[in-house]
Image 1 (cartoon, rainbow, N blue to C red):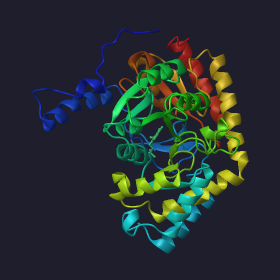
Image 2 (image 1 turned 60 degrees about the horizontal axis):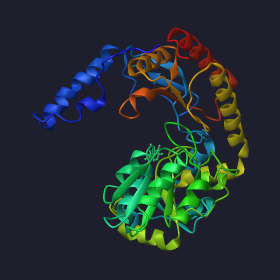
Image 3 (image 1 turned 180 degrees about the horizontal axis):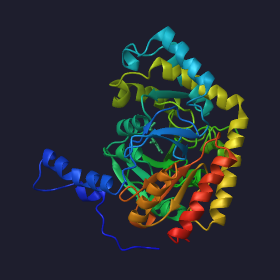
Length: 417
Ligand SMILES: Cc1ncc(COP(=O)(O)O)c(C=O)c1O
């Protein structure tokens, strides 16, 4: 069922020529009030327990604490609440304190930070790495310092905002999402005009769960003299024989020029990294402003993330369980006739294509104690508005079946197929 609804979106509140920032903020209240009026305010839900398949959530409208099946996490391997990962963080805090106390270059580097740098570089098959206090920072800050006006970034249209924001100092051309003819077309047009050509992609796309064809991207890069940067935020720990990510998945470990990622998804923590050649990382250490001018990760996170990497290396069953959940959920979503795009990993877009129905479905799922996120225009195009669902290794078949049962009801009610 498609409705012709004229509803206001975030894009409608970006610019008001006559209003200053305070006026614009007051005007924006109209949007949040409207969400609240319709019980569509599904943002910043307050959790009362650790990230886990069942989330205790304080309901914005009733004040009661609800037990919800949590299908909205990037903590794919449930490491955020893993006893050894927590314990490693506690030990690190006891020894090194609650904060690093300084930026990494000027006093904030402990032996744990050094160990984490070495470990993540090795995990990614690269010579060296640099660690940032967020994944957003690792992408945006590294790109901002590497690419200037004589260079060009050739970027997948659906690349993450942190990559796109990192290209603000340079020339940018976009190619159609995962479309190799489009990439080749762009590469052929920019052939020899720029000092550096850098192809920038996500390994696994955060809103679609599909995988970049890195083997073909690499071939085209070689053919046209370009470098490749891949953001491994949603791939690390999830894909590749050993969970090492997209390069491993395509047998390209150590062969991609720049590999970035976060500790905030399957590793269950926070912070980000870039791994590459020793020379490139040394350059970033002294030119990347998000690194130089920002305090190092807390010792707790560094200690916990070392432990998360050990768990990923040693406990393959977790990844196997996640993949068994992925196969089960995917098969059943397809059987229900839902449009899940080209999802191949733990992220499932349930594409609805109508903002209002998407919000209504998110509200209904919330009321059925199922925690998911609506993704609306302008985050995705209007015809692709969706419910984003994601799986964790500790989801049981019972959790998944309850979600499928709810979806079955909604498919019928909203005529979704
Ligand atoms: C693809 C991608 N890259 C980078 C980031 C930023 O990572 P973080 O949340 O660790 O800052 C995210 C997450 O939000 C992401 O989805």
